Image (cartoon, rainbow, N blue to C red; front, side, top):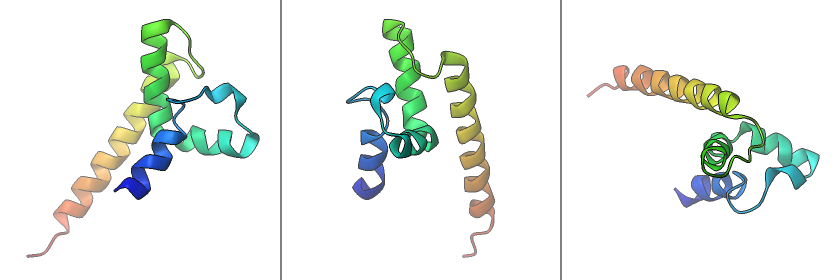
Length: 80
């Protein structure tokens, strides 16, 4: 579990700002759903944001919908 969570956390922008990332890491950070959650929380608490609250909510909703659909699809396919 740490193999998946720790890189997502480090690239989320929770420890350092996303604005100073090199181009390759910035692309990976855009694919990281945690970066949108951290950005939304930072925007609500401090008013400083990188993507914008609207984009954050849209991306988080899309990731949630896709993974809920994937989970329900694979759950239906379970054979006991």
